[in-house]
Amino acid sequence: MGKDKLRRFAENLTFDCFVQPEFEEVFQKEHPLKGNWHREFFKNDNPIVLELGCGKGEYTVALAERYPEKNFIGIDIKGARMWRGAKTATEQGMQNAGFLRTRIEFIESLFAPGEVSEIWITFPDPQLKTRRAKKRLTGPLFLEHYAKMLREEGVIHLKTDSQHLYNYTQAVIDHFGLKRLAANNDIYGTGYADERLAVKTAYEMMFLERGLPITYTQFSLAGKSSFPWFDWEGDDVPEKDNEAERK
Image (tube, rainbow, N blue to C red; front, side, top):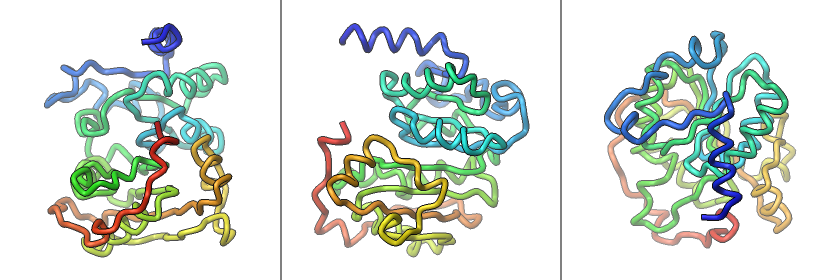
């Protein structure tokens, strides 16, 4: 492991906005912050918004700047990347931005029912290989996690360059009869992008430079809590992914 990564890992632990639970604290256990993020971490009752797979935290920081009346938490497992967002939030004295280093599979151990108002999923790995489909962040397995922490009126946002993941998510919404609030397969080309969507991460800039359209979906779980697995016929012909850019 490079010295720069080690330095970033160590510095992360000095940031008040950075939380890094041990495996033993979240594996089949409830973390002390579960149900206590408002009181113990943010010290206010403002809505909590999660960004899953936040990478460098660009979206988390940008949204926190734009919406001071909300609390934002960027979640990822790659601490060296998250360092950038946590450092920016610390240097700017942001009180409504936090970062949580953990696997997304463990978020039930960290958030109580109704504790989360919104979930953003920005440019995730679309997991194009059929055998990896269960890892898609808009798939049934993860929707069950989200359902256990989202408020009844809570929403999920997906912003992605992957037409395959965009189409898959539309199929998931239709299959489970979820409430589709927005769906646009080219937010810049159609002029759909608003203040929230116009935030451009480093990944997004690369995709735009290559002429790839950026898609957006917003939906709610509509009170559903069970999402049985189903196979999507669109997986028979997956698209080519920008895998190199995502690493």
